[in-house]
Length: 450
Image 1 (cartoon, one colour):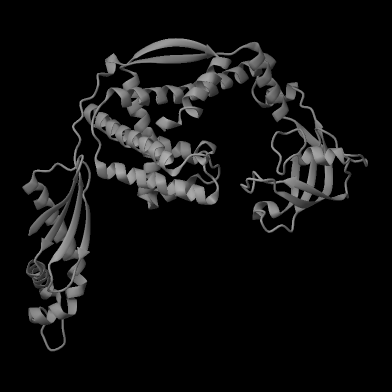
Image 2 (image 1 turned 90 degrees about the vertical axis):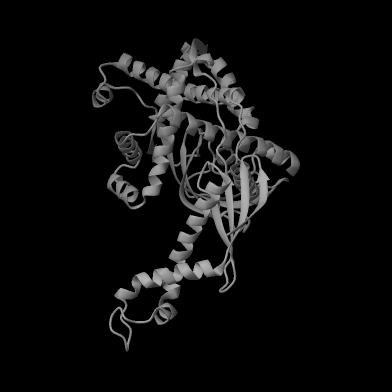
């Protein structure tokens, strides 16, 4: 076996290994010899056919198994000879295989980084809780009442007005419009909703005082939908099918009883607790982000160049696809490719470093996902799809690798919880205004850290 080192970077080695064909041929002969006792060929008693005849018939059948075993053995021998400790399974590729010629094998190895974890007890984080003011609570209550609003069909002939639901058919002949917008039937338009399927469609229809049975042609600027830089007006035919007026929701005794509520105060308490839970969940995401930031800063070690390059290539591939589809983030659109590469190389480095660090912490602290935790995780996932629970569990059984989508987040959260149980936590109470500012600083204006 001839070994040639062809690349060496930080925690990365690449070798070219040449194996004489004679060695491959000997391995094939040995494998053929194993199967001869089971082979029946015309003109020979079972198990008595000569090796060269059996080989001629069955060589291709055993070749892949022989090559796989040979590559495995040579990789193991290389690691032993070079005294290398791989961080993960080496990437092996057969570069050349021709009969009677040496086999050429490429072996890429990411090496195990040396990591000394910064003491958790010396880390400091803020443990925030939310304080809700009366304005926020009233707004939340108002939103709940609004969400319970229902509609009744308008029986008389009258123009559409704000707060109505207008049922329409829409269509356009413009071929540049996506299929989902080109033609839609029985489309509900909530006139007082922030979401509008076409820009300002509610305002346009109300200003025209449309009635049931009307058909109108309206133009809409679809530059955002079509990702155009300049104004792009598209004409649609709008057919008014029906109008429905909104009926304000009123809390009644029947409603309270149906929802197992004693009185309106209990409803208010539940709404408040649910809102607090929503804020707490988002504060946990901020806390986790801050923990990752401090772990990144406090733990210094090199990462394998092979893993880093893979992550950079993966991110860049997604960016190029997003660019082609016109779906780049706004803050990525107006910068050069060089700036974009530097930005995402930094993000890639952070991701790889933290992934290695989290796995190292899990190994050191013996953190594992139990079967019960995994089953509970799958159950929680399945309950998001009522009526399909059995199909989802069957899918997990037939596709064991898909279970990692459940195990991964549980595993990561256990590591985070373990670290948080050991760091210094300072309890801080913040109001909604400070929360919004914190959220913006953490996630919206902090893209460089991924």
